[in-house]
Amino acid sequence: MKRIIKVIIIISTIISMMNITLLNMVAEPDSVEEKLHLLVVFSDESIHRMNEKRLDALENAFESYGLTDGVNQKIQLDLEFLDIGFMSDPLFYETYLSLLVDKWNQHKQYDCIIAYDYEALDFIDAFLMANTVPVIFSGIYDQEKAESYNNIDGVTGFYDRINVLGTVNLAEQMDSTSGDIYVITDHSDMSAYYLKYISEVLEANDRYHIYEINFTELTMSDYLNKLELINPNDTVLLVSARIDYDLVSYDYYNSLEIIAKHSKAPIYSFWDIGIGNGVTGGEVSDIQMDASKIVELLDKATQDTTAFNKQKVSESTWYNTIIDYNYIEKHGININKLPDNLELVNKPKYYNEKSTIIVVVILVAVVTMLFISIVGLFYKIISERRKAILAVKTKSEFLAKMSHEIRTPTNAIIGYTQLLKQFNYGPEDIRRKVDMIEASSNALLNKINDILDYSM
Image 1 (cartoon, rainbow, N blue to C red):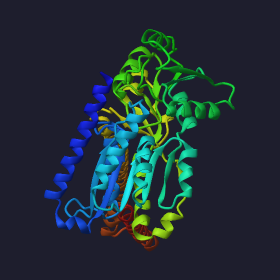
Image 2: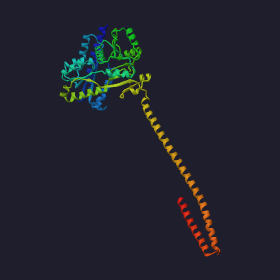
Image 3: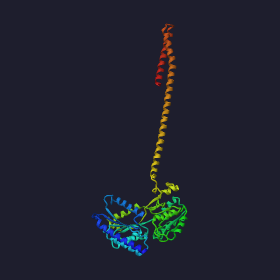
């Protein structure tokens, strides 16, 4: 049965090769010759979420470098999704690669090949036997394998350096505090490599205890039991769980669903897939930055071959902190204690509005306080004005009373002196004294009038 399936796959590949050749012969326009012709090779199927994100990131990077603006396309992309991770028969694997190489050799010379993940390099190795094409790779876990291409002109790229400490520290900030770390793996070479690397990074700290749960080595019953024994404050690091005990291949999300259903502890990853669909979060590889670095190398490969050939393979050390908002909300975690550059998935539509609402509330509070202060100041001014008016009124009443109390007797004195002067009486000296009394009274009255008038 397995051999029949293998034959069917090979026949399908040959038909696909023929169809693509015919399509290129019939439909490929002459203007393609003026474009940058690239072949992008992925190790997984086209529907894999990681590949979707990588393609989106490449398109964004192409646009940033002016290779496409949505109207004028300066590149032509050919895509190949190998999906060969499940092939365990070496002969079949080699046959499949050979057919793929024959298919793409029928195309014109590529300006560059971009390869993602480990298996894609096997295709590149086979392709380069008959071609001399610049190659840029990314997502390679094996540092030694990646750096071996430093000895080959025209091949360079990045090997994937996962951020173990960053992810574990993030887990601790999210209340995974026991120090027990469970690494979920399978029988793949990638799992073995990363388990060793994780252990090397964490073994220097005595508070961490590393435990492996190997999906391939355990029956499903034993696997589920181990998952259920994990405590809620432990940390689960998902590396790979694609092949089970019976060598049945699982889709990533189906495998993740099993883990999330049976593990009480949060699940963390080093890659930007599954977060929000079972994975709590992680310090993950920055896919957009990776694409930008690839396009930088592509520019060298097409503009300066000498500089490109001298380009050494390097590690990717660019990361994003991504967390599932639902987990934060469910466990009441204070988001302020998490990294500032945090990216949230599954955040509600109103989440971005929350910040706006908070700002509006603060502004309203400030305006209200300002209004209260202005009203208070206005009230104080009115109060002071009332006091001033009252003081003026009191002063006026006082002056009016003083005017009456002082002027009346003075006028009386003046009046009586004038009456005395109308009669011819007494000696001359008495009349002179009456004149002095009148003059003095008039002078006093004038002074009083001046004082009262000035005070008004």
